[in-house]
Image 1: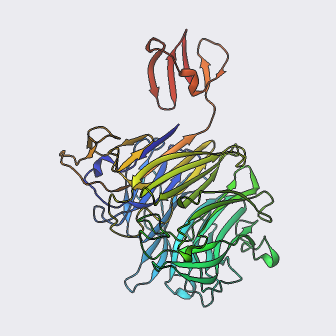
Image 2: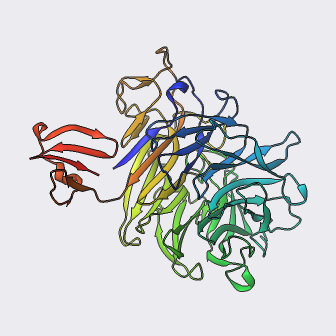
Length: 506
């Protein structure tokens, strides 16, 4: 079962912001602890609010805010703290990467632990993406537009929890079109660290809406020593391996032939490594075939390597009948793969969010629609509308994800598979009576909120307290049970029932 929660706390019920581009960090040692963040506007003291849950995402509270232009979050491998990497705009128009650390008890992220202004202190960096590894390692992928050449895909490597870093150039070949795409993503298994980026090799021109298209190479590089080898462990001369050569893109306007409705897109990218096999890695990337001719196609592909990134096999692609982007990838401890993504259907003018899973290496897939919303409600107040990315992670046998979407769950403007709201409302979610309110009961306009979800894939067991042997149970085993057989039903992750004796579903 997939449980979805609007993470805006009850104390913030009056807010009507466009809370886009969500990020999520989950404590790997205690998944009941998690921190999420989003872009917002004037309701919060700064434009990037953070939220804390200490009960597995069931409820959330405010965790302070920072003034940022981009951010991502990760929990340290030892569970001691969460770290956020942010992009801070400067008064001169430049940008710098900053990092902050915080704990569940600290109430917010504390003072800066890092300030990095890019190559030559150029103050021209973009889209920091943070992941963590063992032995207090932290990695921040980013695009360094201040270099004196076209080798812009980069990563900061820290071996002391993020306080000091070494800057590593990932693209040692260079991008003939002038720069690499904004997204640089990493995934860690022990001392093995993968990084992927999209090298723009040529300009293919623009479409009638002014969107840019590029010939491209999706490139993977690898470190076998936690980053100490400068990510030079893969490919000829350590320059990495080309996974695919899609048509890459950068949209400059909303509601055009390239976008997800009001949501702009740009060279989407995600990567995940198997927690039990460092040689097994998957990458999702975007492709806009014939886009400059106005085809309106926007496809996500998934490729897989089982030999440490040396060779790649195409495994999955989204339908070309809709436009798909904003991928997030994760692999569970049992090998199940999850792909979180967003789609837009131009025919219905609707956005939707999906969690696609496979237990047999894409031999078959299950695509769960988490939510569907009208592209017309609410109207975007800034870019990105719902975010340049969504976020999916995992701990053990559970997927944890976050996406931003319209909160207008009135049965027509937005519909969710199964959602709970902490913020005040009247009526019934999923019906025309649903209306957000403030603490005084006054109506609040529909807006964009971050939504958390989790999906546990473990097979439940029936533990008979009277000493009987455990019996495997599935959801179908509960069908047909009458009220006399069910007692004090749902409590956390356990379901208690009476059927010839007390039993608990774990």
